[in-house]
Image (cartoon, rainbow, N blue to C red):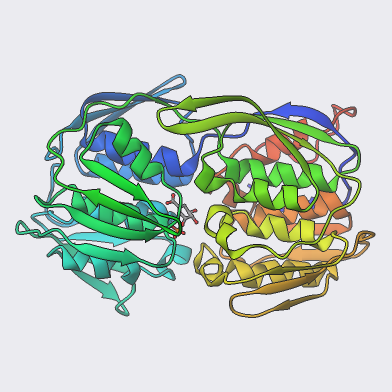
Length: 451
Ligand code: S3P
Protein backbone atom coordinates (compact mmCIF):
# COMPACT_ATOMS: atom_id res chain seq x y z
CA UNK A 1 0.00 0.00 0.00
CA UNK A 2 1.53 3.25 -1.13
CA UNK A 3 1.69 6.24 1.19
CA UNK A 4 1.43 8.88 -1.52
CA UNK A 5 0.50 9.51 -5.15
CA UNK A 6 2.36 11.59 -7.70
CA UNK A 7 0.64 13.66 -10.40
CA UNK A 8 2.72 15.35 -13.10
CA UNK A 9 0.19 15.93 -15.82
CA UNK A 10 -2.85 18.14 -16.31
CA UNK A 11 -6.02 16.35 -17.31
CA UNK A 12 -6.97 16.73 -21.01
CA UNK A 13 -10.49 17.98 -21.79
CA UNK A 14 -13.24 15.41 -21.27
CA UNK A 15 -16.91 14.77 -21.99
CA UNK A 16 -18.18 12.02 -19.75
CA UNK A 17 -20.99 10.64 -17.63
CA UNK A 18 -20.07 9.35 -14.18
CA UNK A 19 -21.65 7.91 -11.05
CA UNK A 20 -20.27 8.98 -7.71
CA UNK A 21 -20.90 6.97 -4.55
CA UNK A 22 -23.86 7.09 -2.18
CA UNK A 23 -24.56 10.05 0.08
CA UNK A 24 -22.65 9.81 3.37
CA UNK A 25 -25.11 11.78 5.50
CA UNK A 26 -28.08 9.76 4.27
CA UNK A 27 -26.19 6.44 4.54
CA UNK A 28 -25.27 7.02 8.20
CA UNK A 29 -28.78 8.20 9.08
CA UNK A 30 -30.27 5.14 7.34
CA UNK A 31 -28.00 2.82 9.37
CA UNK A 32 -28.89 4.47 12.67
CA UNK A 33 -32.65 4.77 12.12
CA UNK A 34 -32.89 1.23 10.69
CA UNK A 35 -31.12 -0.07 13.78
CA UNK A 36 -34.09 1.14 15.85
CA UNK A 37 -36.77 0.10 13.37
CA UNK A 38 -38.86 -3.02 13.82
CA UNK A 39 -38.11 -5.44 10.99
CA UNK A 40 -35.73 -5.76 8.10
CA UNK A 41 -34.54 -2.58 6.38
CA UNK A 42 -32.77 -2.79 3.04
CA UNK A 43 -30.57 -0.19 1.39
CA UNK A 44 -29.25 -0.10 -2.15
CA UNK A 45 -26.27 2.02 -3.12
CA UNK A 46 -25.30 2.43 0.55
CA UNK A 47 -21.98 4.24 0.71
CA UNK A 48 -19.41 1.52 1.42
CA UNK A 49 -16.89 3.78 3.09
CA UNK A 50 -15.10 3.70 6.43
CA UNK A 51 -17.45 6.26 8.04
CA UNK A 52 -20.47 4.12 7.17
CA UNK A 53 -18.71 0.88 8.19
CA UNK A 54 -18.00 2.55 11.54
CA UNK A 55 -21.76 3.15 11.90
CA UNK A 56 -22.46 -0.49 11.02
CA UNK A 57 -19.89 -1.72 13.56
CA UNK A 58 -21.45 0.54 16.16
CA UNK A 59 -24.95 -0.91 15.78
CA UNK A 60 -23.51 -4.44 15.69
CA UNK A 61 -21.85 -3.74 19.04
CA UNK A 62 -25.31 -2.81 20.27
CA UNK A 63 -26.52 -6.27 19.28
CA UNK A 64 -28.15 -5.46 15.93
CA UNK A 65 -27.70 -7.97 13.11
CA UNK A 66 -26.76 -6.94 9.58
CA UNK A 67 -26.24 -8.68 6.26
CA UNK A 68 -24.50 -7.63 3.06
CA UNK A 69 -25.52 -9.36 -0.11
CA UNK A 70 -24.34 -8.31 -3.57
CA UNK A 71 -25.65 -4.74 -3.86
CA UNK A 72 -28.03 -4.90 -0.88
CA UNK A 73 -27.35 -4.05 2.72
CA UNK A 74 -29.81 -5.26 5.34
CA UNK A 75 -30.33 -4.30 8.97
CA UNK A 76 -32.45 -6.44 11.27
CA UNK A 77 -33.83 -3.85 13.68
CA UNK A 78 -35.52 -4.93 16.89
CA UNK A 79 -37.41 -1.78 17.74
CA UNK A 80 -36.80 1.37 19.76
CA UNK A 81 -35.64 -0.68 22.77
CA UNK A 82 -33.86 -3.34 20.77
CA UNK A 83 -30.26 -2.43 21.63
CA UNK A 84 -28.55 -5.06 23.80
CA UNK A 85 -26.55 -2.86 26.12
CA UNK A 86 -23.58 -4.57 27.75
CA UNK A 87 -21.19 -3.52 30.48
CA UNK A 88 -17.88 -1.96 29.38
CA UNK A 89 -19.03 -1.19 25.85
CA UNK A 90 -16.74 0.94 23.66
CA UNK A 91 -17.94 2.36 20.35
CA UNK A 92 -15.35 3.59 17.89
CA UNK A 93 -16.63 6.36 15.60
CA UNK A 94 -13.23 6.36 13.85
CA UNK A 95 -13.11 9.51 11.66
CA UNK A 96 -16.84 10.23 11.59
CA UNK A 97 -18.15 13.34 13.34
CA UNK A 98 -21.63 12.53 12.08
CA UNK A 99 -21.65 9.04 13.61
CA UNK A 100 -19.95 10.17 16.83
CA UNK A 101 -22.40 12.98 17.43
CA UNK A 102 -25.63 11.38 16.22
CA UNK A 103 -25.16 8.13 18.11
CA UNK A 104 -24.79 10.00 21.40
CA UNK A 105 -28.37 11.18 20.93
CA UNK A 106 -29.61 7.61 20.54
CA UNK A 107 -27.70 6.35 23.58
CA UNK A 108 -28.87 8.78 26.27
CA UNK A 109 -30.94 6.05 27.94
CA UNK A 110 -28.15 3.47 28.16
CA UNK A 111 -28.30 1.54 31.48
CA UNK A 112 -24.50 1.10 31.50
CA UNK A 113 -21.81 3.67 30.73
CA UNK A 114 -20.72 3.61 27.08
CA UNK A 115 -17.33 4.88 25.99
CA UNK A 116 -17.05 6.66 22.63
CA UNK A 117 -13.64 6.86 20.99
CA UNK A 118 -12.38 8.03 17.60
CA UNK A 119 -9.22 8.38 15.52
CA UNK A 120 -6.62 11.12 15.94
CA UNK A 121 -8.62 13.63 13.88
CA UNK A 122 -11.97 12.99 15.59
CA UNK A 123 -10.27 13.10 19.00
CA UNK A 124 -9.33 16.72 18.35
CA UNK A 125 -12.91 17.76 17.53
CA UNK A 126 -15.50 19.42 19.74
CA UNK A 127 -18.02 17.12 21.40
CA UNK A 128 -19.15 19.64 24.00
CA UNK A 129 -21.44 20.94 21.27
CA UNK A 130 -23.55 17.80 21.71
CA UNK A 131 -22.83 16.86 25.32
CA UNK A 132 -24.16 20.25 26.48
CA UNK A 133 -27.66 19.88 24.99
CA UNK A 134 -27.81 16.13 25.68
CA UNK A 135 -26.96 16.72 29.35
CA UNK A 136 -30.09 18.87 29.59
CA UNK A 137 -32.17 15.77 28.78
CA UNK A 138 -30.84 14.17 31.98
CA UNK A 139 -27.91 12.07 30.67
CA UNK A 140 -24.38 12.75 31.89
CA UNK A 141 -21.19 12.98 29.86
CA UNK A 142 -17.55 12.77 30.90
CA UNK A 143 -15.29 14.19 28.22
CA UNK A 144 -11.53 14.44 27.92
CA UNK A 145 -10.56 18.10 28.51
CA UNK A 146 -14.31 18.76 28.99
CA UNK A 147 -14.83 18.77 25.23
CA UNK A 148 -13.09 15.91 23.41
CA UNK A 149 -13.11 12.16 22.89
CA UNK A 150 -12.83 9.76 24.57
CA UNK A 151 -16.14 10.50 26.21
CA UNK A 152 -18.34 8.37 28.41
CA UNK A 153 -22.13 8.51 28.21
CA UNK A 154 -23.89 7.90 31.49
CA UNK A 155 -27.48 7.36 30.44
CA UNK A 156 -30.60 8.00 32.44
CA UNK A 157 -34.04 6.43 32.74
CA UNK A 158 -35.54 9.75 33.81
CA UNK A 159 -35.18 11.84 30.69
CA UNK A 160 -37.01 15.10 30.14
CA UNK A 161 -37.62 16.96 26.90
CA UNK A 162 -35.72 20.19 26.27
CA UNK A 163 -35.84 23.47 24.37
CA UNK A 164 -32.66 24.28 22.48
CA UNK A 165 -31.43 27.08 20.30
CA UNK A 166 -28.97 25.67 17.73
CA UNK A 167 -26.97 28.65 16.49
CA UNK A 168 -24.06 27.11 14.56
CA UNK A 169 -26.05 25.75 11.62
CA UNK A 170 -24.85 22.25 12.49
CA UNK A 171 -26.96 19.34 11.26
CA UNK A 172 -25.00 17.04 13.55
CA UNK A 173 -26.03 18.94 16.68
CA UNK A 174 -29.63 19.25 15.44
CA UNK A 175 -29.83 15.54 14.59
CA UNK A 176 -28.31 14.39 17.89
CA UNK A 177 -31.03 16.37 19.69
CA UNK A 178 -33.78 15.00 17.43
CA UNK A 179 -32.59 11.45 18.18
CA UNK A 180 -32.50 12.15 21.91
CA UNK A 181 -35.94 13.79 21.69
CA UNK A 182 -37.31 10.46 20.41
CA UNK A 183 -36.67 9.04 23.86
CA UNK A 184 -38.71 11.50 25.97
CA UNK A 185 -42.45 11.86 26.49
CA UNK A 186 -43.02 15.56 25.83
CA UNK A 187 -42.11 17.62 22.82
CA UNK A 188 -38.48 18.69 22.48
CA UNK A 189 -38.30 21.98 20.62
CA UNK A 190 -35.26 23.01 18.58
CA UNK A 191 -34.82 26.43 17.07
CA UNK A 192 -32.19 25.51 14.49
CA UNK A 193 -30.19 27.72 12.18
CA UNK A 194 -30.68 26.27 8.69
CA UNK A 195 -28.58 23.16 7.94
CA UNK A 196 -28.98 19.91 6.01
CA UNK A 197 -32.34 18.34 6.86
CA UNK A 198 -31.95 14.65 5.96
CA UNK A 199 -32.83 13.56 9.50
CA UNK A 200 -36.09 15.50 9.43
CA UNK A 201 -37.01 14.20 5.97
CA UNK A 202 -36.33 10.58 6.95
CA UNK A 203 -38.35 10.99 10.16
CA UNK A 204 -41.24 12.51 8.21
CA UNK A 205 -41.13 9.73 5.63
CA UNK A 206 -41.35 7.25 8.52
CA UNK A 207 -44.35 9.16 9.96
CA UNK A 208 -42.56 9.78 13.25
CA UNK A 209 -43.97 12.47 15.58
CA UNK A 210 -41.79 15.25 14.17
CA UNK A 211 -43.02 18.64 13.00
CA UNK A 212 -41.03 21.36 11.29
CA UNK A 213 -41.99 25.02 10.92
CA UNK A 214 -39.78 26.55 8.26
CA UNK A 215 -39.01 30.18 9.09
CA UNK A 216 -36.91 32.49 6.99
CA UNK A 217 -33.62 32.16 8.88
CA UNK A 218 -34.22 29.12 11.04
CA UNK A 219 -36.36 26.02 11.45
CA UNK A 220 -38.48 25.24 14.45
CA UNK A 221 -38.49 21.49 15.05
CA UNK A 222 -40.73 19.55 17.41
CA UNK A 223 -40.05 15.90 18.25
CA UNK A 224 -41.49 13.61 20.92
CA UNK A 225 -41.37 9.99 21.99
CA UNK A 226 -41.17 7.51 19.17
CA UNK A 227 -42.74 4.19 20.02
CA UNK A 228 -42.18 2.39 16.77
CA UNK A 229 -40.22 2.91 13.57
CA UNK A 230 -41.30 0.82 10.60
CA UNK A 231 -38.61 -0.78 8.47
CA UNK A 232 -36.97 1.56 5.98
CA UNK A 233 -36.07 0.46 2.47
CA UNK A 234 -33.95 3.09 0.74
CA UNK A 235 -32.14 3.61 -2.55
CA UNK A 236 -29.39 5.98 -1.47
CA UNK A 237 -28.81 8.76 -4.03
CA UNK A 238 -25.29 9.89 -4.92
CA UNK A 239 -23.44 12.39 -2.76
CA UNK A 240 -23.25 15.98 -4.02
CA UNK A 241 -20.20 16.51 -1.78
CA UNK A 242 -18.37 13.80 -3.73
CA UNK A 243 -19.73 15.12 -7.02
CA UNK A 244 -18.42 18.60 -6.15
CA UNK A 245 -14.80 17.57 -6.80
CA UNK A 246 -15.73 16.61 -10.35
CA UNK A 247 -17.90 19.68 -10.87
CA UNK A 248 -14.95 21.91 -10.03
CA UNK A 249 -12.53 19.81 -12.12
CA UNK A 250 -14.90 20.21 -15.09
CA UNK A 251 -15.24 23.95 -14.48
CA UNK A 252 -11.43 24.29 -14.43
CA UNK A 253 -10.83 22.16 -17.56
CA UNK A 254 -11.16 23.79 -20.99
CA UNK A 255 -13.95 22.54 -23.29
CA UNK A 256 -15.16 19.92 -20.87
CA UNK A 257 -18.56 18.57 -19.95
CA UNK A 258 -19.70 16.16 -17.32
CA UNK A 259 -22.95 14.52 -16.26
CA UNK A 260 -23.10 13.15 -12.72
CA UNK A 261 -26.00 10.74 -12.41
CA UNK A 262 -28.64 10.49 -9.72
CA UNK A 263 -27.33 13.03 -7.23
CA UNK A 264 -29.11 14.21 -4.09
CA UNK A 265 -30.02 17.86 -4.73
CA UNK A 266 -31.72 18.56 -1.42
CA UNK A 267 -31.93 22.40 -1.26
CA UNK A 268 -29.99 22.34 2.02
CA UNK A 269 -27.03 20.74 0.20
CA UNK A 270 -26.75 22.65 -3.08
CA UNK A 271 -24.77 25.68 -1.94
CA UNK A 272 -21.96 24.50 -4.22
CA UNK A 273 -24.26 24.67 -7.25
CA UNK A 274 -25.39 28.21 -6.42
CA UNK A 275 -21.78 29.30 -5.87
CA UNK A 276 -20.47 27.68 -9.07
CA UNK A 277 -23.32 29.23 -11.08
CA UNK A 278 -22.54 32.66 -9.60
CA UNK A 279 -18.94 32.12 -10.71
CA UNK A 280 -20.06 31.55 -14.29
CA UNK A 281 -20.25 27.75 -14.50
CA UNK A 282 -23.19 26.41 -16.48
CA UNK A 283 -25.02 23.76 -14.48
CA UNK A 284 -28.26 22.05 -15.49
CA UNK A 285 -30.41 19.63 -13.49
CA UNK A 286 -31.81 16.84 -15.67
CA UNK A 287 -34.33 14.06 -14.90
CA UNK A 288 -35.41 15.66 -11.63
CA UNK A 289 -37.40 13.47 -9.27
CA UNK A 290 -38.59 13.29 -5.68
CA UNK A 291 -37.66 10.35 -3.51
CA UNK A 292 -38.90 9.85 0.06
CA UNK A 293 -38.86 13.61 0.63
CA UNK A 294 -35.43 14.10 -0.98
CA UNK A 295 -34.80 15.63 -4.41
CA UNK A 296 -32.63 13.87 -6.97
CA UNK A 297 -31.31 14.82 -10.43
CA UNK A 298 -28.57 14.19 -12.95
CA UNK A 299 -26.24 17.19 -12.86
CA UNK A 300 -24.73 18.46 -16.11
CA UNK A 301 -21.71 20.77 -15.84
CA UNK A 302 -20.24 22.71 -18.74
CA UNK A 303 -16.86 24.41 -18.35
CA UNK A 304 -17.04 28.20 -18.73
CA UNK A 305 -14.72 30.38 -20.84
CA UNK A 306 -14.15 32.68 -17.86
CA UNK A 307 -14.54 32.22 -14.15
CA UNK A 308 -16.00 35.14 -12.19
CA UNK A 309 -14.86 36.01 -8.68
CA UNK A 310 -17.44 35.89 -5.91
CA UNK A 311 -18.36 37.58 -2.65
CA UNK A 312 -19.89 34.46 -1.27
CA UNK A 313 -23.18 35.16 0.55
CA UNK A 314 -22.81 33.86 4.11
CA UNK A 315 -26.28 32.36 3.95
CA UNK A 316 -24.79 29.71 1.64
CA UNK A 317 -22.15 28.64 4.16
CA UNK A 318 -24.04 25.74 5.77
CA UNK A 319 -25.27 24.36 2.45
CA UNK A 320 -21.73 24.28 0.98
CA UNK A 321 -19.76 23.60 4.15
CA UNK A 322 -18.06 20.42 2.89
CA UNK A 323 -17.31 21.89 -0.54
CA UNK A 324 -15.40 25.09 0.29
CA UNK A 325 -11.92 23.59 -0.05
CA UNK A 326 -12.53 22.66 -3.66
CA UNK A 327 -14.49 25.86 -4.35
CA UNK A 328 -11.36 27.82 -3.32
CA UNK A 329 -9.61 26.27 -6.35
CA UNK A 330 -12.16 27.85 -8.64
CA UNK A 331 -11.60 31.20 -6.93
CA UNK A 332 -7.86 30.74 -7.59
CA UNK A 333 -8.58 30.89 -11.33
CA UNK A 334 -11.28 33.57 -11.19
CA UNK A 335 -11.00 36.97 -12.74
CA UNK A 336 -10.72 39.10 -9.59
CA UNK A 337 -10.76 38.79 -5.84
CA UNK A 338 -13.14 36.40 -4.06
CA UNK A 339 -14.28 36.67 -0.47
CA UNK A 340 -15.59 33.98 1.85
CA UNK A 341 -16.65 35.02 5.36
CA UNK A 342 -18.04 33.67 8.65
CA UNK A 343 -16.43 30.30 8.01
CA UNK A 344 -15.31 29.53 11.58
CA UNK A 345 -16.98 26.09 11.36
CA UNK A 346 -14.60 25.13 8.54
CA UNK A 347 -11.67 24.93 10.95
CA UNK A 348 -13.64 22.45 13.07
CA UNK A 349 -13.79 19.69 10.49
CA UNK A 350 -11.62 16.57 10.01
CA UNK A 351 -8.69 19.01 9.74
CA UNK A 352 -8.67 22.80 10.13
CA UNK A 353 -9.87 23.24 6.55
CA UNK A 354 -9.66 27.00 6.27
CA UNK A 355 -6.02 26.71 7.28
CA UNK A 356 -5.52 23.92 4.75
CA UNK A 357 -7.31 25.82 1.99
CA UNK A 358 -4.88 28.67 2.55
CA UNK A 359 -1.86 26.31 2.71
CA UNK A 360 -2.76 24.64 -0.60
CA UNK A 361 -3.25 28.04 -2.28
CA UNK A 362 0.07 29.29 -0.86
CA UNK A 363 1.87 26.26 -2.24
CA UNK A 364 0.24 26.93 -5.61
CA UNK A 365 1.47 30.52 -5.50
CA UNK A 366 -2.03 31.99 -5.17
CA UNK A 367 -2.18 35.07 -2.98
CA UNK A 368 -4.72 34.82 -0.20
CA UNK A 369 -5.42 36.62 3.04
CA UNK A 370 -6.81 34.24 5.61
CA UNK A 371 -8.10 34.89 9.11
CA UNK A 372 -9.61 32.44 11.59
CA UNK A 373 -12.99 32.69 9.86
CA UNK A 374 -12.48 34.21 6.41
CA UNK A 375 -10.42 33.96 3.25
CA UNK A 376 -9.80 36.46 0.47
CA UNK A 377 -8.45 34.82 -2.69
CA UNK A 378 -6.71 36.81 -5.41
CA UNK A 379 -7.64 34.92 -8.57
CA UNK A 380 -5.45 34.55 -11.64
CA UNK A 381 -7.21 33.39 -14.86
CA UNK A 382 -3.81 32.39 -16.35
CA UNK A 383 -2.71 30.36 -13.35
CA UNK A 384 -0.30 27.56 -14.27
CA UNK A 385 1.95 25.66 -11.90
CA UNK A 386 5.43 24.45 -12.83
CA UNK A 387 6.93 23.61 -9.48
CA UNK A 388 7.02 20.70 -7.08
CA UNK A 389 4.30 20.65 -4.43
CA UNK A 390 4.11 18.27 -1.48
CA UNK A 391 0.91 17.89 0.54
CA UNK A 392 1.26 15.95 3.79
CA UNK A 393 0.42 15.89 7.50
CA UNK A 394 -3.20 16.96 7.00
CA UNK A 395 -4.65 14.52 9.58
CA UNK A 396 -5.61 12.25 6.66
CA UNK A 397 -8.49 14.60 5.86
CA UNK A 398 -10.17 13.03 2.80
CA UNK A 399 -11.28 16.39 1.45
CA UNK A 400 -7.78 17.90 1.68
CA UNK A 401 -6.46 14.92 -0.27
CA UNK A 402 -9.14 15.06 -2.98
CA UNK A 403 -8.90 18.84 -3.33
CA UNK A 404 -5.14 18.52 -3.86
CA UNK A 405 -5.67 15.91 -6.58
CA UNK A 406 -8.14 18.21 -8.36
CA UNK A 407 -5.65 21.11 -8.10
CA UNK A 408 -2.87 18.97 -9.59
CA UNK A 409 -5.06 17.80 -12.50
CA UNK A 410 -6.45 21.26 -13.20
CA UNK A 411 -3.34 23.44 -12.85
CA UNK A 412 -0.36 21.16 -13.58
CA UNK A 413 2.94 21.07 -11.68
CA UNK A 414 4.59 18.12 -9.99
CA UNK A 415 2.53 17.07 -7.01
CA UNK A 416 3.24 14.50 -4.35
CA UNK A 417 0.14 13.99 -2.22
CA UNK A 418 0.26 11.80 0.87
CA UNK A 419 -2.42 9.56 2.43
CA UNK A 420 -4.42 8.38 -0.62
CA UNK A 421 -6.12 5.94 1.74
CA UNK A 422 -7.99 8.89 3.21
CA UNK A 423 -10.52 8.61 0.36
CA UNK A 424 -11.85 5.45 2.01
CA UNK A 425 -13.54 7.71 4.57
CA UNK A 426 -16.14 9.10 2.17
CA UNK A 427 -15.39 8.29 -1.46
CA UNK A 428 -13.41 5.09 -2.05
CA UNK A 429 -13.89 5.18 -5.84
CA UNK A 430 -12.57 8.75 -6.24
CA UNK A 431 -9.27 7.86 -7.97
CA UNK A 432 -10.93 5.16 -10.09
CA UNK A 433 -13.34 7.77 -11.46
CA UNK A 434 -10.45 10.15 -12.20
CA UNK A 435 -8.93 7.36 -14.31
CA UNK A 436 -12.25 6.97 -16.14
CA UNK A 437 -12.21 10.64 -17.14
CA UNK A 438 -9.24 10.06 -19.40
CA UNK A 439 -10.83 9.92 -22.81
CA UNK A 440 -8.29 8.56 -25.24
CA UNK A 441 -5.28 6.93 -23.79
CA UNK A 442 -7.18 4.09 -22.12
CA UNK A 443 -4.09 2.09 -21.21
CA UNK A 444 -2.44 4.90 -19.36
CA UNK A 445 -4.09 5.39 -16.03
CA UNK A 446 -3.32 8.27 -13.76
CA UNK A 447 -3.19 6.07 -10.71
CA UNK A 448 -3.31 2.46 -9.70
CA UNK A 449 -6.87 1.65 -8.69
CA UNK A 450 -5.77 -0.05 -5.50
CA UNK A 451 -3.93 1.45 -2.58
C1 S3P B 1 -23.01 16.39 8.38
C2 S3P B 1 -23.09 17.70 8.77
C3 S3P B 1 -22.01 18.68 8.58
C4 S3P B 1 -20.98 18.19 7.57
C5 S3P B 1 -20.62 16.77 7.76
C6 S3P B 1 -21.84 15.88 7.65
C7 S3P B 1 -24.14 15.50 8.65
O1 S3P B 1 -21.37 18.93 9.81
O2 S3P B 1 -19.83 19.00 7.62
O3 S3P B 1 -19.66 16.35 6.80
O4 S3P B 1 -24.24 14.41 8.03
O5 S3P B 1 -24.98 15.85 9.49
P1 S3P B 1 -21.98 19.95 10.88
O6 S3P B 1 -23.32 19.47 11.20
O7 S3P B 1 -21.10 19.90 12.07
O8 S3P B 1 -21.93 21.28 10.21
